[in-house]
Structure formats: C-alpha cells, structure tokens
Image 1 (tube, one colour):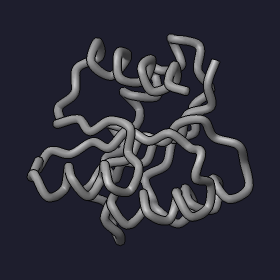
Image 2 (cartoon, one colour; image 1 turned 120 degrees about the horizontal axis):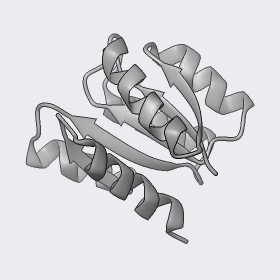
Image 3 (spheres, rainbow, N blue to C red; image 1 turned 180 degrees about the horizontal axis):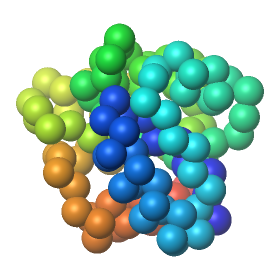
Length: 120
C-alpha cells in the first residue's frame, strides 16, 4: 500500500483521516505543522500528500509549491473548507491531482486517494 503524508492544522481532522487510511492498509505520516512535514518529505519517500489550504504559518498552496520543488512525483490531494475558483485553479496549476471541499466524507476520501494512487 501507499505511504501517505497528511498535513492539516486541525489535529482531529488529521487523526480521522489517518485512522481511515490506516484501516485501508496505508502507512500514514500525520502532521499539523508545515516545516516538519516539508522536512519529512525531503528525507523520506512519500506517495501521496493530503494538504489543507488553511494552515498555521503557510498556505496549503505554498506548501504544495514547495513539495513539488522537493519531490515533483508526489501526488497531492488539496482540502479546503473555503473553496474558491482561484484556489482550485492554483492548486491544479501547481500539480494537485485532486481538490476536495471539507468536510470530506470517508467514501469520498477513499475514492480520491484510490484514484490518485492508481494514476500513472
């Protein structure tokens, strides 16, 4: 199964997503702070990063751009509770494979993760 990094400033959201993904057999690396997550990506293989747009110090868009500089092959799923057309466009321009509006339900998360991991 996949190695998945989750970055969300809400620890409960991270725990819920991590539990679901672990139940599906994935190895999960949960983070609530941007810099430790970016450091982890720079030093460890990750198949998929799930990023919230609203974070503590940086925007999820900024984190996405940094991830793509560090490890361009990482697939990304961007989450937001504040959807805008601009945010969606910028996420896709930077290489996000999926864009989801929070709250995301378990079935939608599983579907999007499966689709991203199956992509060539």
